[in-house]
Image 1 (tube, rainbow, N blue to C red):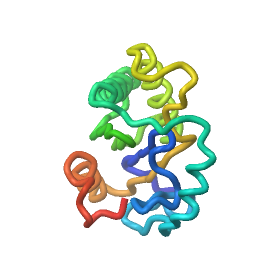
Image 2 (image 1 turned 180 degrees about the vertical axis):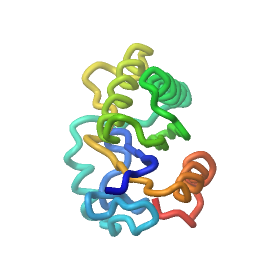
Image 3 (image 1 turned 90 degrees about the vertical axis):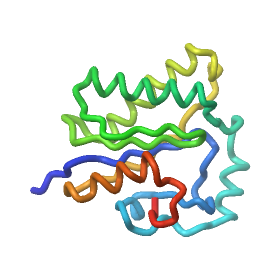
Image 4 (image 1 turned 90 degrees about the horizontal axis):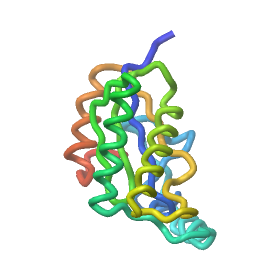
Length: 164
């Protein structure tokens, strides 16, 4: 069985990027790097926004720095090869070489530790959800997928040539 060479892991801040949003999103059927995202569905996004139980979260520059540092530190401690990390105001992207765990476990650990440090800094209040429930875990199957993914995460997120 073929093994992936890395993972492109993305998650959003609570309430800041909902399914159906014009920026696009992924689900289990729309989660392969370079393929189309979910179709835009404004009514779905509005319905989801109405169901929020807390205010949406946006990371400040200080919060973005905390998240980036936390992910970097955690990768170092766990022996995971971090290739790129970019915490933005409403989402986080990470590219990592394959590790000894599934990408969902990595994402869960990064979210948990980042939440602890954001709360300890006073940037996020107790009881406020910080992240969406899951995120996107795209498998990178060959070395040729690594460089464009890292470029996208670090420099190209506003470029229209990428579909995710």
